[in-house]
Image: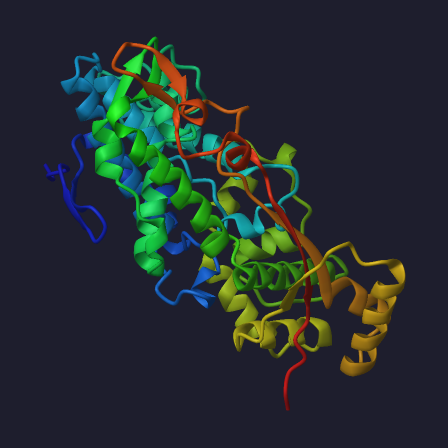
Length: 421
């Protein structure tokens, strides 16, 4: 029998260990292995060349931090059964499994009215069914991932498990800040993840941070704010995303009009057919095809479409491949209809395309926004030495509540960069 208790060497956290056969079996499922072919940061490598790490490595890192966090809680007397620990670790391992190619970029481009979280849940249910069928001769009467799914959906009786997966101070955010700052080289994103985990405790079934960890929480929030504007919402990264969205939107339009385009069978399924939330179920064809999609499908299609006889698609693909990305500039107000008409006329004349095509594909307005802390979500609670619990927004001496919860917006105009002959 194969040894399933593996040790994995990670460049961010060092050695990480799989501690049960079930963790190994889930990790080997094709849905999980697919994450190795999807970049964690989408198109950020256009700005930070080292940002080539995958969602697979992020999921492993988050599972490692979950294991460390549970160990710290156990040391403080919080009772956590082995079944609960395994369920929590698998839930965080699978939390991003529903992401499509280039992560958030294509979430609403290829499929309508469904989020990656909803697809993640369907994939978890499918894996649960697959493993249950595989092990039907064993002692498992219920699905082996039932606890993990309950924790993921916040239906498990002990709420703090879900907080470890999805809250304003969860192991998902801890890993992506550590990992993304490491691979981009943006030092401002570094956080004290080990100290944060050691400061965890549970009060009334809610996660809290002990008082002496308050400075690490403050650093965490500042790091997250800086990473969003310096990495995740970097103007060039967003420009690349808008460029890619235009490519796939044009490809979908051509496909729906009957034009034959080269693409993989999985990408073809979504280009040539309108697929929405109602098409997705745990055992549906839509989910099967979605599970075959990764970054490679999109990149290989774009390389081929560089020679397409449709001029708009050809121009978009050639400039994207050669990194002649959309040019972005900040706007103080949305474009007027007259300004849009001037731009459409300019690109129509310069590129030899129709004004309608120029207006739809050669420029776009986009709003980038992010907030550091939300009063509406689970608060980050600080446990003081006298036993009282206070929200970090009230407990911190240096963080201003209004600044924390403010949601700044930047309105950009992204325009096609005309190739230089």
